[in-house]
Length: 242
Image (cartoon, rainbow, N blue to C red; front, side, top):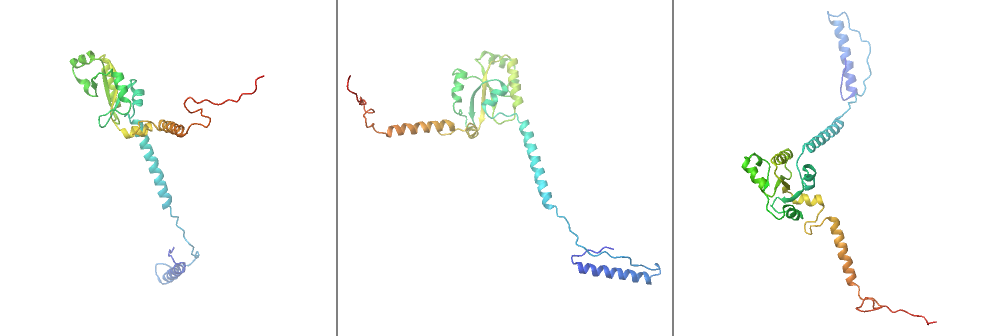
């Protein structure tokens, strides 16, 4: 017989009463000849180990590990292009320009666009446009070249590869890649570029340093020996001739 109670004295009293009742019941009952009391274990404190905190930390760790695994899998399967250098490495063609979401060229890419296209307005071919008939490809072959449009941040890398493959099979000259829908703020952060001056952070530092040196030189007046004055010469002391 085991008795559990928050109060050890009350647990002891209950156990004693139960033992005495069983012994008395054994002497009065016709079913038993007798019930004999053998021994009694002193009451002791039962300690329950609360592992709630450990379970919470384990759950947080497993959740973070699972989230990191999902992010890594997503990054591995992400075939989107975000910057022109990545597009050049992947497809082996020069990035002729980068169009932002408002349709304007980003930074100096307008200069690259004019150079690669020779100042001409070349046809722009996007994914899904190669399903046209032979007359369509004949017109592309007769042009001075085409630009393959690559949407920024869109997971269609395999579709772009299919587009370039079809253009190559049809002997269409692809002058370069035209990235569209780029996020100007993301590119500014990626290139560490100041939006107002169009310079990177290192270029801005050199620019400001040069301006500061120029202002310091300008703030200095003519030197005391007159060497800085127009036509001024520095006096020289000569010793007696031998």
